[in-house]
Image (cartoon, rainbow, N blue to C red; front, side):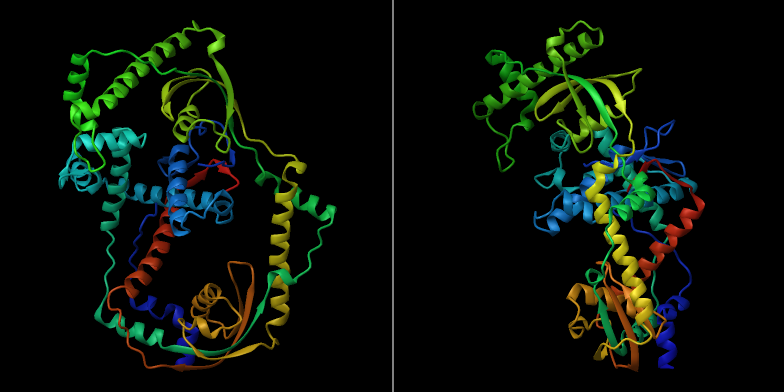
Length: 487
């Protein structure tokens, strides 16, 4: 009986559940190659839902900030690249788009009342315990977000949430007992770690060049944009007392101290002047924009720059808007960048192209070595797994990471998670760092255990299974097209 459970424990819980599917959605840098044509304005399309570069930037930025918090600020673009953050960001968006298509198929919509209720529940827009429309507008303005853009994002989030509410995850009283049985299965194993760095890789010029030939479409330059631009000088004017007091009275909620209290006029006076000057500067920037379009500006005022997602002298918002311009409609109204209004004209779009070998020599070397180490380590595992001699453990469960002394804790956790899903008595498991652990199950027994966490394990397990099931189901139903390569 125990042997049967060991060989079939991956499916032990699955088979007692009715197949229900659920999904929980997740969620500025250089990207890969675009496929141009009529899809040039999007980076991907899932069913009827298009994913824009702006969406991708936002998703990446959210992920980057999450990782930065986890690493307490010790996180940079190199680490982001090694973690595959770009691909994660795109995957999150495509998964969300799949659910959005599902919502559309059920004719689900978000009403203005639902949108308003959600916004009014967000405490960062509260003043004295209640929602403040002024604080709402100010907060979005500080984040360079328009009300329209923010509310579109909230509607999208609510729509996904509403679709998922149709797919509820429930548990039965007997499932906790079954969890106790599964968690109590213990294995006594012999194991051996094959380190990926212990294999020798042929890195001759011929091998490296041949590898590049097969992979060169993954080494693409960025899409870049040649632009002319004009920075608007800040306008400074003199205002009489009546103008200042009038503006203050109409906009006093703009002027608050660190505790959120409205400043008296005398204390806010300099801020009032700054705000009036900003309004005048914007008006002047719009006049400059009109003159720019009519080609009535002196060339000395116009500067030139080539921008891309890794070389951006302006802001992600500005770049996103520039990327939507066309040669037929090349002018962009003034955009606020670091406190300055800038007007852009698109001169040329430089499409992505394959980089020369010398440009990617180091990256190609690293990718080749990584691939060859993985191949050779696996070959060694295949040759050795039937007869290897290694370290023997006591009886271990999925939680006994400390008993695997040849593995670091995170590696032991990863290994045990896969071991207790495997149906093989003797096999090997590849870890995410590239190492391989060979194992042989020597004995098995059932421990007497009681599940003390009555709320989370089953829901988490079911959610993970259902998430995967839903995505696979929706992927077969809605076509996913990716127009950006190299992720």
